[in-house]
Length: 208
Length: 208
DNA sequence: CTTAAAAAATGAACTCATTCAATCTTTTTC
DNA sequence: GAAAAAGATTGAATGAGTTCATTTTTTAAG
Image (cartoon, rainbow over all chains, first blue to last red; front, side, top):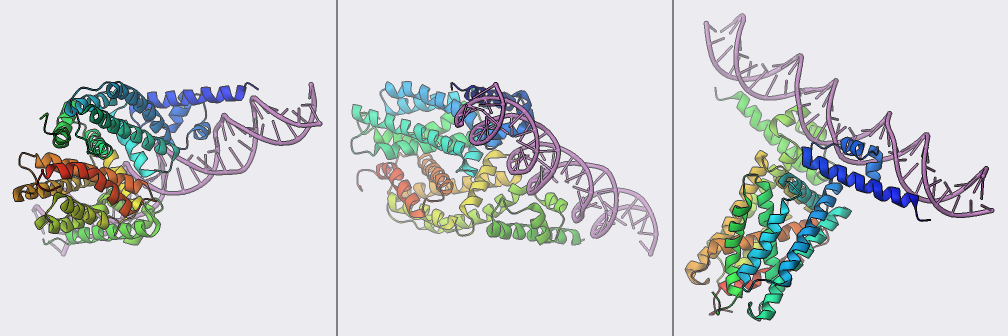
């Protein structure tokens, strides 16, 4: 009743995910063969496909874990943000970017993004999109919070502005992972410049 | 001397690109096999690979042609834009979006975008990125032009603001092609709302 | 015109992601 | 506790993209 079967299933699932994540980090996504992942997880190739629809799904699963952590880290900033829009955005976005390469390589990000675009109906792609939505909401929430505090002019559409900030930081993150040579500092600098007009203007005339 | 060889090469290249574009439209990207493309172009599979590094490259080549047309269409608007920032942006972005599905399906866009992210070093991916850059410049140019006219406040960073508008419209276009159910009208509506805060604020106090 | 060198075309062979019919394991039924 | 049903595992087979040694075609040299 307790489920030997359920236990085995959870265990296999964990082993497969761990094996895949390790291999991706070690040899990169493309060079990691399903056969190798299966062997390391001590299951057959067929079993791999009982747990994940395809090779990409398991990468997006790894990305999901990472984004969950980013969201948690972002929450601490949204809960008690700096006083100005510029500082608050810099803090939140910096948090996002700094966390992005802890577990995943640029190559893994590229692949995950590519999959989420190419197969939008797959379960894990839906999940990726959902996580993106939560990140976007977090930015909007930050703007709305600053608006309540008076750091953002009343009458501004906090949601629309937040979405714009998010879409911008997200698009620039794509540029970042596409360019192996680009550093995190460069990325932050560019996004900072792009955000400045909107960040300054929604703050109103009081503060610069 | 004139080059029988060069002539044949150009001819084969044209045939391959045409065959691929036709097939993609007829049966979709995934179902179009290299063997079929090669057969229709009257070359061998190996020859296909002498002209294009992989299956994705040829799709990005097709997309490139499309974007060139979009750029040309956008130029007419940038050359003589409407008076206000809001109207000008709506016109330019509407032009972009309306043109996007004339030759390419959402599926083809998804695949092309996925490739350009996943294999950023391939020649045609570089080309795609370059075209994106030119589109971005076009938006910045529009803002700069309006600024000269006095429709945008002096002191605003036209390039930064333009990049933000572009990144936003580009990101939302990705959302659009990911969702088969989303219509062009819905897309325009959402982007309009997102752009409004920045568009209104950079216009200055004179006009709303 | 002949021959050597360079460039390009070719398609069979290879790699890997993915599938599926057969087999094995766990759970349920009586 | 034996037998049937349900649920999972398995790995050989499949199929499509890609490679590469060989052959063919074009150009350059003598």
